[in-house]
Length: 235
Ligand SMILES: [Cu+2]
Image (cartoon, rainbow, N blue to C red; front, top):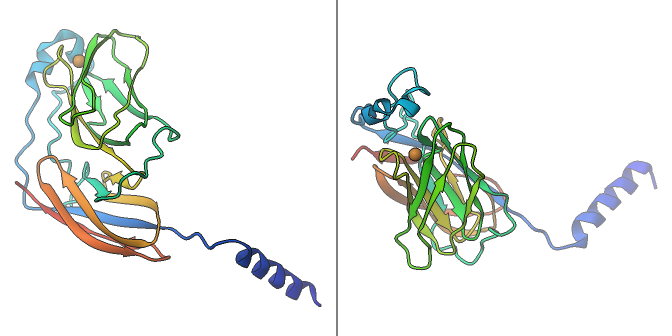
């Protein structure tokens, strides 16, 4: 037997040895139809000397973060009805920072039980106040001094757009969506999202935006990556 043949046999042997575990990514682009209303200047931020010192120009709201071709960021994309699959306790923490008296990012997503680490990168005090709407998720209200230790939260129940606010700076908001599975993503500045390692099956995928609302479509995952694009409308 030639070396080449032996390698082939070896390779075939390896592949047939165990069950074939296949998974694929669901990839898509979210675009926004219509012209969003202009973002508003957050003028109260500039009235606060501590916060104003960290900005050269007045920051604006981020209701619609949209690119030149309508690429829509901050859309939370998830597989509907997939529950009991959380790997949250083992997943690395997700970080929510406070910078220049703004939450960053303002839209994020975690698994149930996954740690959410809240940092204060500012030279001023913040107040981290989350107000869940789903029973079982606990409200927290914690002062975080400049240079203070990171705060850690986790939520046991799925919830869309769980609100984080700051009582010191009433314009500060972040929205944390909680899923009972690892199959979700938030679209980036190019409107792109990737839901990784989805097991084969039929799913309903939901794209949800704080202002533009939600849309669903059905996808079937086999053994190759699947594309699912969405067109959301200005509301
Ligand atoms: Cu604050």
